[in-house]
Length: 446
Image 1 (spheres, one colour):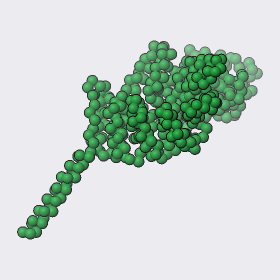
Image 2 (image 1 turned 135 degrees about the horizontal axis):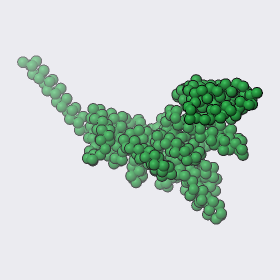
Image 3 (image 1 turned 120 degrees about the horizontal axis):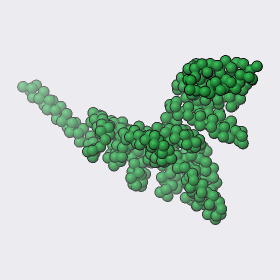
Image 4 (image 1 turned 180 degrees about the vertical axis):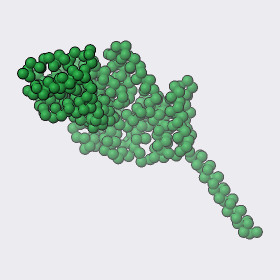
């Protein structure tokens, strides 16, 4: 009897313990925010529900809460995303990204002061070099704007130890000097940024203010600011990650593509820039690069492609076109700025090398690589590149023409004729160029 009572007592204690644990677990597990999804795009509803389902399955997972927060933030639900990042930090307390995203979203909502403690927490938690530099830069930028100059100065010194001399460090130092009233130091630093794609417009606008004692100089900088394209966003891999959670991005890109098809190129370029003002995205930067290239704004195209590749380095198409852009820039400078031209040709070669490392069969990349080598005076290497283009696509007459022209220009005309003839053989009847080139060089082979 006593034994039965003892067993019943143990069962009762265990049962009460389980009930107490379940009650505690339920009480301490946060609830999922409700969302106004009526009438929303079905793809958006699907993405949100998938993220919410993951949270329900793993209610104490920091990653699950963060994923839900990023889906919400990327699609315009900023307020409901805040508790998600709060819970992500609670269950994954060593990750700097979650408090940073919470602080950044509060700043986006105009609640910057409220977001500062989260940014400070993120700075303290950052581990990787990239995260430490990114968080130091963005937090210092906000601190300067809020007048917290001493704390901002400490973060600037920290950033200096991570990337001494970088353009974003100089931009911070300039703003810090300006806020302290040191207009001389601010002007000197800003003057080094008038060609930087992420700072040129802002730098010129600030210089116009700082040099108002000299009307001619102020006017010059004011005009430069007015005509400069919008500054590209400073690198921010944490915020840029949000781009892949945006359900509406594909729809917005369809709007751009329709503008492009209608021939509204200038309007399409402005539209892409407006998307980038909301958030940096590799696909949008790449589309902007392609549009600017077609519009013959080669410098702007190079900046856009480089920004895209900084977010996503594995883009063979963007790398191939970037190499073509650098060839155009080199040819533009070849007559007057030989040093700058050679630098552009080297950049073209590097871009095509990167493209081919990702996808060896890109015929255009082999051709452009050969053209870059030819301009750099590396003639034998250019022959090899053009031969690789022929191997990649032997039915393309342009690959045979490129090798033939390179050989002919190097004085090897008889050898070139063979390739011109091959180009004629594979060319379509409505393509007169191979026959014209063959006819042009045939007399010179005798």
